[in-house]
Length: 468
Image (cartoon, rainbow, N blue to C red; front, top):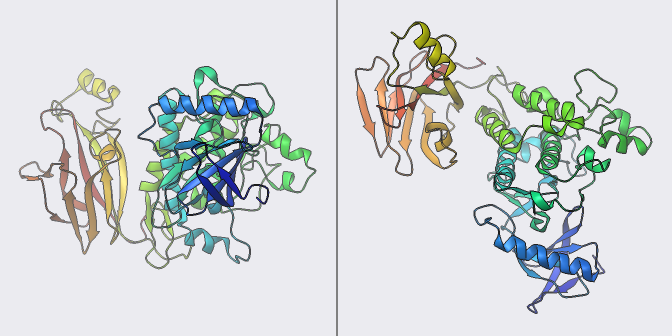
């Protein structure tokens, strides 16, 4: 840092650099005094590097990225420095700050909870995956995902995410050089047997996702940590088993948070797919849209302990952080509902409806999503849940307290409250409606969408204290 305490932009603005906040495969990122901007200094300082950067920034300016949480390049630097200035959200820190306890911490678990716990980490990963999936959906790749260039809210009550280092972004047709942050590069890039593509992004994301949740790197087990340096490169190349390999226990890790606490069954399965089959066959890796869905759903199935600040999965009878009994909660289950279908459908008609995913194998409306509503913990259901769209905008606010469920439509949405027997119907467009919760749940369901078309209905099932 002493060699570059200040830089000057092409427009003549002089910027004071105060500290390094990230380092990737191409260079380092520094915070600018004042906190609203950052500067990336490239490692290579040649004229050709300066020209490549200028062309890259010009290309980025033409791309449709305005709706994504990316740190925008706003000015290039004057020689002798090669780099650019980017605008940062305020109050952001690198994701890596949530992966390693500060020196002097006596309890990793206490630190884990104090920095936001399980649910916040799941939300941050879901939003990171959303951004990367959106890039991939537009034919672009990020190239160098790492916890150094994913920034998250410093406030633990917030879950904002912003990606920096956007000069890395490439189109898939001009994949560019295979640079990566050590520890996050895909095996084929390390072995120089493959090109940068969306699947190399997926590998890097999976590594940092596992590390953020489990507080240990998926490749750096006790075998590698206690062995010679060359074992680390072998692990990153996929020549050694990852720490939770299903059949090979050579590289197990004694560090980190127990995976039974921080990983759902689906997350466990997909990490195994990424770090076992995916190490040799990139096509076997889960894609970013799939990861985004998994993390959103995992976060939706967590609850907060009533005794400690920890959050945990609802399928546990007690809090894994303090052993207190899990609070009562409702399961909001979204079902597909077809007005053309009723219980009289039989034979081939019913089999066709099962095949078409309207009914489940038992011939009942199929549950397509579910979410936990813990006692005394208000939540918002997004449009993706209530209406089956891609939008994550809030559509409904719910609060379960005192044996009643309070329902409030948001952002102009309209819902219908239907009695289970179908005899009573109330439309809810604004304000709050309270419905009673019985021993098994609500005697009402919510309908979103037109009653004469395929739509979603949401039912509410009760789980008592300590019942997984």
